[in-house]
Figure (cartoon, each protein chain N blue to C red):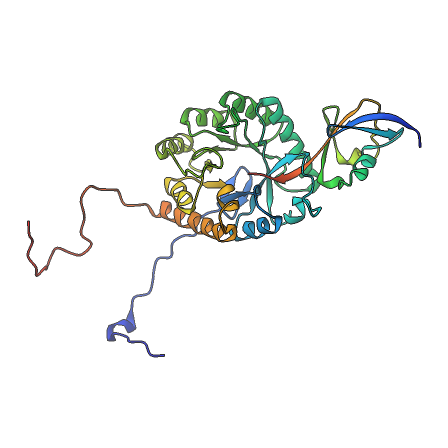
Length: 70
Length: 292
């Protein structure tokens, strides 16, 4: 598999094959898609679009979930 | 087993007045059977958290939005321990020190709740802090963020200090509930300025008696909860006082009982405090003498 897309995922650089989707990245990080919210370059991507949203070089992805808090 | 019964006790008048049951806590269009809202942070384990939440009787619980600690050491996510059928999740903006961050985190929290189909999904507990040592709110940024989030369709439950003027400004801006701190977050100092809380309650409920005022932060033990309700608060939000008690589940029970006791006492109406005593037994018919 050719590595030709470099993104930043939750603050870390990630090398990915071209055509990788948000859903693929979440699966790779073992995150359950319904438990996270994702920002792509500062814009929220609805979970319904995780599969069709492909990542490009330089994209910044944040995936957050809920944790204990007061 | 034999009970002694006085002859006259056979015909005791029965209780003729049954007090009306307390109403539920209504926040915007959501009704909560319990007046306690509890946090989910700082528990030693998720099992203790789950049991404590259950014991507290709360049906709304706060959660934070983070990328760190996606899963605990055993690979569990907190959502595995929070049945969305049972709890309304109230995401907070804890850890935000400016308006832009608070708005961003609130939107992310709403997005997670949308995918979970949780009914609280337009709710946010807004907190915009000014200082990491005191965790006191930044009032200017809080008001800005409150306005922006309301414009974006949020129902804002707004953490603030116990300043009555600020509380009034937040209500006027459209906050669904104003949530004054009793004392700094996690400090366990209880309600430091009950007079400010009295003024907040007077201002915010003037002509709008059902407007929900929730004491958020500072609770150390059960009596603090009772006092908040006795003063007239509609709800209390607390976390550390349960999570860091020696026995969290037992403390959760205490908080539940204190909430009920304080609320009932408020509805019942306390007697005024007075300097001198007032005898409970009649003066008429006394057969004893008085020294003075």
